[in-house]
Length: 318
Image (cartoon, rainbow, N blue to C red; front, side, top):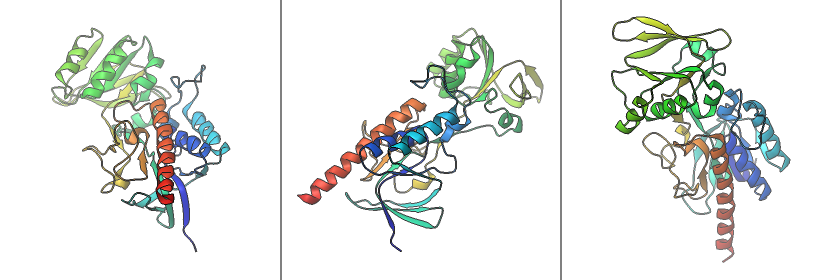
C-alpha cells in the first residue's frame, strides 16, 4: 500500500494551527491537520475569550475553536483526530519528511507546520483542578479583566508572576502574591515594580493548601512552609504563574530549541533550522502566549510554507 504524500501537514489544532490551515487551504496547499490529544488546545479550557478581535460580545473558548475548525474545513483542510507519535525530518531542501501517527500510520510530507502549543504548569491540587475555569486561571492577561475591582491571588516568584501581579494590581482591588521561597526569583527591576504597588501583598514561604469554593473560587487556604501554620483569605480569582512547558518533546534532537524547549525560528519568520519545517504559536513564543499572536504566526507559517514550495519547484524547473 502506497504511503500517503501530503503537501502541507499541520501538527496541532489551536489558533496557530487552524489559522495556518485557513491560509494554506486558500493557497491550495491541501493541508492535513492532526489535532493531537487536546483538539483546540489551551483555549478549550477557557470559559470566556474577550480579547480576540471580532467578537464584541466575547466568545467561549471551545466555541471559538469549533468555528475556527469549520472555517479551515470550508476551504478544504482535512482535520483528522490523531496524535503524531514520531517524526523523521529531512535535512535537505525539497526533502520529504516522514511522520508516524498513532504509532502505526506512516505519512510523507513536503512541508510541516508545528503548532503543538504549550501547556501551563499547575500545582496539581484536586481543589485547583476542580475550579479551573471557575476562578482558577493560568493567564492573567487573558482572564484578569473578569476580576476587575475584586480580590485575587497569584502563585509564583519569577518574572512572569511579578509581571502578572502588577498587571492585576492595575485592575483588581487587591492582589496577594504567594512565593514558595523566602525571596523572589524575579529580576530586581520586576521586584521593584511589585513592591511599588500599594495593593500587592507578597507572602513569602507560602504555598496553596487548598482552593476554596464549590462552583467558583471564594477563598484560599495558605500554608506557611516554615512553621506549618495555615490561614485563609477571601478571593474570587487565583492565577497560577509557575511557568509553561512547550509541547516539543516529539521534535527534540531534530529541531533546534532553547534550553527550556521552545523552538527557535529564524528572524521574524517561522522557519526552523530544517528546510520545509515551520513552527507557529506557543511552541516558539515564550513572551506573549496569546491566541491572537498565535494566530498571527499561524498565518506566517502558511505563507512561509507556500513560498518554500514555490522556491523548491522553481529550483527543480531550473
